[in-house]
Amino acid sequence: MELIELECRNCGGALSASDVSMELSMVRCPNCQSIYALKAESKKSDSPSNDLLKKPTIDTPKGFVVSDSGRELEITQRWYTPLFFGLLFFALFWNGFLVVWHFIALGTGAWFMSLFAGLHTLVGMGLIYVVACGFLNSTVVRVSGGVLTVRHGPLPWFGNLELDASSLKQLYAKEKVTQGKNGPSYHYSLFGVDHSGTRRAVLKRLQSVEQAVFFEQRIEHFLNIEDQPVRGEAPL
Image (cartoon, rainbow, N blue to C red; front, side, top):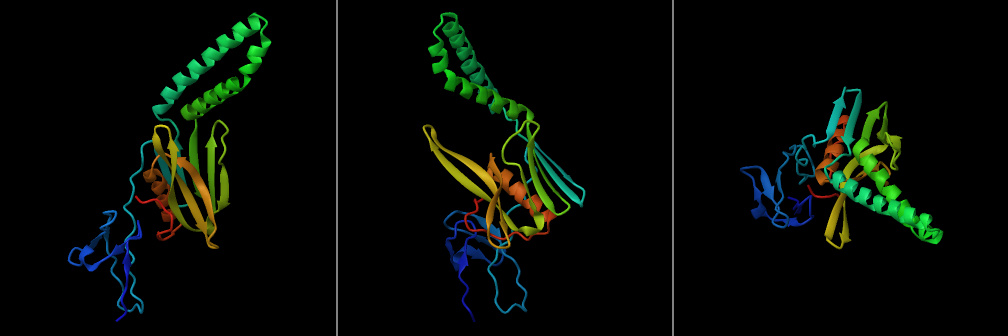
């Protein structure tokens, strides 16, 4: 009999016999405390597998709208969150100060002072645009006719994408940690892996791992892609 070594699909930690409950068909990882159900294996298999069942199904997150006709899948994510109100007040304060600055500088003939604030003015205009996008924009992910498209609008934004859906072998969520003055911040992306093993970002800067996994599960289900663990994917 061949000895099969069990590993946690989330953290890769080793699993021992004491972690497995055959009566409940479950296993608990002693390292990350993840709990999984065990797949029943066919008796005809020559090489039994220790694969665990897919990750839990994520319900539709707040701000998402899904349309699935069977021939076309469309997922719309609205950008708006209450945080944009705070950013709006900051942008108004920033730009209001600059308006007063330029008014005084130009009114007194000190044009160099106005020129000095030019970079800050560009930053203020950028803030206003980001706030406007936050209130108005949505991300639309559509799978139709064998093509996966990502569009952000109605205000222009980077990250639009179009790719051959049949080239996708797997989708997975990826976590990015950014260290700041107030501690770490976490952002999540949805990556695709094609049949050659090439990885490509499909969606970036999602607010939670649940949002990324939701996109992953709905697109994989629509394309009949069986979920498999991917090295480097964010744990759910």
